[in-house]
Image (cartoon, helix red, strand yellow):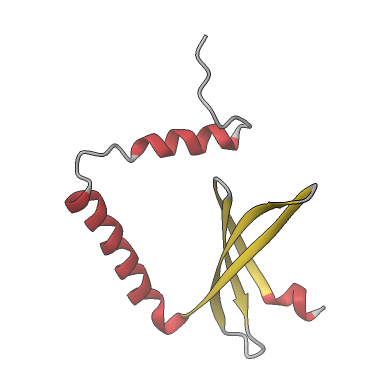
Length: 107
């Protein structure tokens, strides 16, 4: 088996406008696991596009701390900074993109 095939165990993609986030579980040579989070942004160039990527590595010893900090930060924004904002509207938009549409169409 090639090293590249063995390395990636699981992958999840999150599309967000011109950005795409990739959450990839990979293995080390010692059969340990870590998470890479990649932000890919698409920029027009000539007749096509170029992609700017930023990658972050997260190791098992930091999973809980990272998850807790992310959850606390998002909850702070939702409850303290923007309590009146309806974040559920984005869930509907994401569902539409999954079936091929990105805009609501009114007739």
